[in-house]
Amino acid sequence: MLRALALCLILSACAAEPALVSPDTGLSGSVTRQVVISDHPHHVLLGHVLIATDGAETTRALVIQQRRDGVHRVRMWQAWQDGRALPFRRLPSRAGCTHGTCRDNAVGFIALGPMMLEHAARNGFSATLIGREGAIPIQAPAALFAEALAPP
Image 1 (cartoon, rainbow, N blue to C red):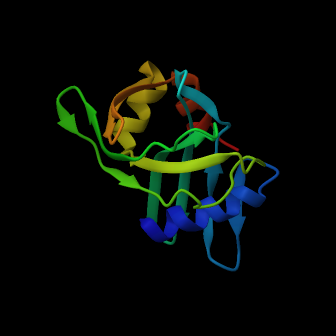
Image 2: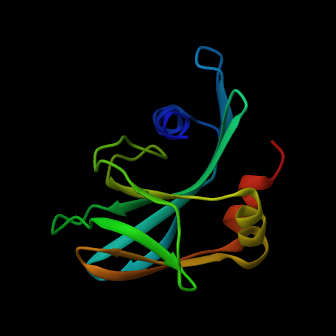
């Protein structure tokens, strides 16, 4: 899963379209637009949904970045939703640029199972990130997940 996500992050930096295809790596998939998922005076978090297939393995994730503000960088360690831990992984802050901008620091990603993705496409997605700065609530709109599931 990490290999597919890493390749997608690299390819999405170069992608002019939301489709990701690399015959050299065998990777295919799509990436959505970025939206603000947490707007706070000291940290604005952005998110996009990524679906990547590497052979028989498919990775679905909400990828989270922080808009650089010159003041500080958030460091998150966990994500929670309705009292249960979500599969959250930290990413190195310089994991790569996405969506044509290098103004963002990578924060991490929340892996989404197929049912979670479909539920989020109908109802949106909310969670709480936990880290050095305390608890940061995030909210991603249903339309973002529906965009990820839409056929190319």
